[in-house]
Length: 106
Image 1: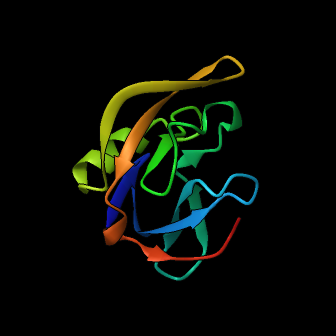
Image 2 (image 1 turned 90 degrees about the vertical axis):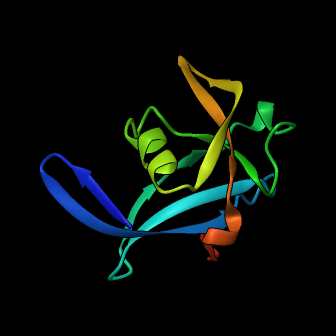
């Protein structure tokens, strides 16, 4: 998948993992050479009743481009709910996890 940021194009691939503390979905992007690029999701422990193995909160704070990238690549669908952490609000997405390979990172 191509991701264009700041006039540069990156060749990235999405991977799925889980957060250790609650086993909810973590979605990671890696460059094709295997280098980590970004973590698309955020682990909101207080809101994990909405998150599971297909649903996760998108980290729009650190990755303001994430929602556009997810929609353009059919990686997920917004669910109309948000989670809060600190001063930030994160949208909940249902991810097409079958499009992602498994990786153990968290």
